[in-house]
Amino acid sequence: MELENVEKVATEEIEACEDLDQLNETRVKYLGKKGLIQGFMSKMRDLTNEERPKFGALVNKIKSAVEEKIRIAQEKLEEKKINKKLESEAIDVTLPGYKFNTGVIHPLMQTIEEIEDLFIGMGYEIAEGPEVEEDLYNFELLNLPKDHPARDMQDTFYINPNTLLRTHTSPVQARTMQAKKGEPIKVICPGKVYRRDDDDATHSHQFMQVEGLVLGKDISLADLKGTLHEVAKKIFGDERTIRLRPSFFPFTEPSVEVDVSCFKCNGKGCPICKNSGWIEVLGAGMVNNNVLKMNGYNPDEIQGFAFGIGVERFTMLKYGIEDIRNFYMNDTKFLNQFKGVK
Ligand code: FA5
Image 1 (tube, rainbow, N blue to C red):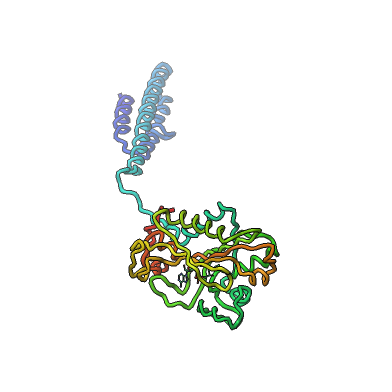
Image 2: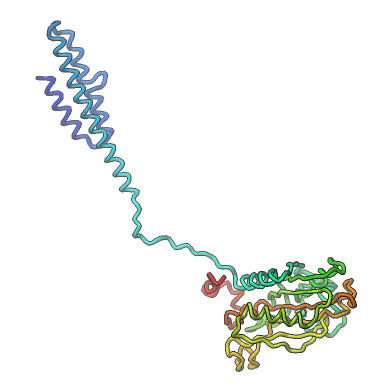
């Protein structure tokens, strides 16, 4: 009777357990070495030989029954524990996600990359030169001796009488010619340049240019014109027109300036284009014989063209940007317009 009662009470206690710790305590209470069921085993000593096997079998039966109930309860509690964990770690897929702010390639860099891709596709190499430059490369080797009046065309930041912040990317022409020692050349050079210009809607004291230089046999002005038309078509599309205007640069002869029809008024005239209908974007020409000679080339054997693109002006025309100063303000609202453009 007492034994059967133990099974009943144990079953109730096992079923009342709420977690695995409680269940373990209950298991020790009934099945442990000093547990209640083990206690009955030690009572066998007091029984007669006849009673002992019967009693032993009964104790074993109850022990197995309690073990089985604990096993079942353990499975249930383990499942309960896992479900609780899953519930607490559940992901609500309907919640809004985190917003990550991504950067954007600066529009001027996008234009430079576009120009680079275009020229690399035409077989050009990329050349580089220093921003802190010697007067020699920036002016003298480009046919601009110290007292030449055309130096006033580019107001210069001098560091000392022979060192300056380059006013254009043209010194890379001289550097490349000196390095190539009479060999044919086909390079572009993108980079920053500096001038003591007053900042306004289309001028900045620091801006970017892409220089181009092609030297070889029988290179003519027609090659320059064809190249510039190709660039304008690729960058601005067919809706803008370009015009070549005779101009003057000491390092090219003849020289031209290239204008693109104004993005705002489409050539009619407005404050942005100073009522001319055109915006100047680059200077170019056939490399002056003096420059070729000074830099180790024989003009009778080799000649070619050069150009200098204003990167800000290109970008303004391409995207209809009215003020050059927007490029340098770090205003994310402005910059984000160029997300995914390239
Ligand atoms: C030159 O700098 C010549 N080195 C270009 C050249 C190269 C001619 C090779 C012949 C052969 P220019 O000063 O015109 O030229 O400048 C070239 C372009 O830079 C201009 O067409 C314009 O697009 C841009 N630019 C000039 N000044 C500024 C400025 N202050 N701010 C922004 N862009 C400018």
